[in-house]
Length: 427
Ligand code: GDP
Ligand code: IMO
Ligand code: MG
Image (tube, rainbow, N blue to C red; front, side, top):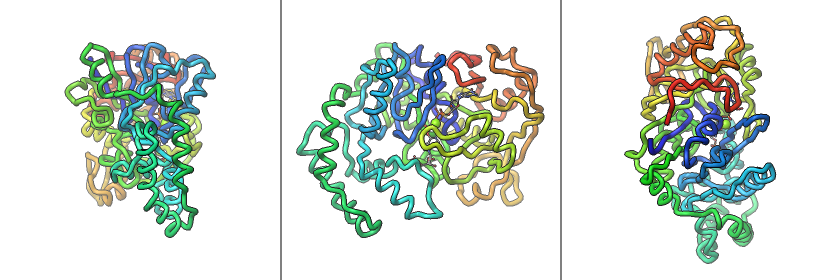
């Protein structure tokens, strides 16, 4: 099993951090392939809780080499503070590798993210304000700054000049903001060079060599399928490809090396920020899911929007990612509901629709068609095997599996590493 991809099947926050950490002990490398510190992954190890934003969750497994791939956007200040925070807690971060081709998030990206959201007013995306969109825009526009540029002052200066030329016009004339000085940015970036140089590597070469030697590589997605810039609910998406193909472009490992694609799937649905969400609950049930599930953002502290499970989305995630397995998380949060509605299809303009509509207009008009499943009241957090689950919880999992198009190979019954029912091994 040379390479596995682990990704979010919904709108992010499915529990990817916990699932990655769980597998971290059995793999050699854990690699982030896209996104940046817009991600917030909570990992609970024993009585310790870690909030990771940029670093792969494998950093908490001592035998594992964490890698930041070329597809990630790196805010160097955030990276260094995350590293020192972990070091203070006794976590060994020395094995980290960072691709020299990864792009940097600079202070002007963060500024532009915030002012452009403000400018959009009612039409805003509800971004995390971390500069993600502007950094990827510069990458595609070929005016981005890469990690390797930190080590050549003359090139760095030329690139920052080129990037700020037009941005300063936009900042001053469109957003009524002060221009940003080239010297100030160059100086700040150069200040990170020495601290980062020891981590920078040709990660594509390292990872392909590792796979050739029979080592196991796990690609950890940030965000989720419906936040993908190509396959998500555009324009209410992030600016990268969390879907499985992103693992290849974001690391330089070819698709023929990937044998397993695991979709992390919450037993209900959440979303942060703006955009359509057919099963959203604006009532007591939504509030109850938010409270019991602790659905508050790790990155921005915003309340997550909550709703029932949506099988149309799960099927879509299976399709666009070629999922081989699901890891169902947070089943324990549903304990105590007498009946649990599950969205099996949508009604759009009077018609029943089984697949996610490709048209934004149709998706905005979709109302869920629910099937209601019987709930359970027994505490399931101690369950170690599928048979330990109450009958109705078993039926809920089986129903979701039938609707979603891939086997559910693991079930989360609590935030801790051990609070997992493993049905099939991924390795
Ligand atoms: P990520 O962004 O996909 O890594 O997910 P987050 O960490 O943002 O949000 C998931 C939250 O659910 C975290 O607080 C996890 O500790 C927690 N969590 C993960 N799996 C489970 C589970 O099976 N049960 C419960 N109760 N909490 C879980
Ligand atoms: P993890 O990895 C949930 C959302 C933002 C916003 C949209 C665009 O923890 O699952 P961006 O700052 O990326 O330009 O914002 O994407 N978003 C997330 N929602 N979980 C995340 O990451 C997210 N990262 C971005 O709320 O709607
Ligand atoms: Mg998260």
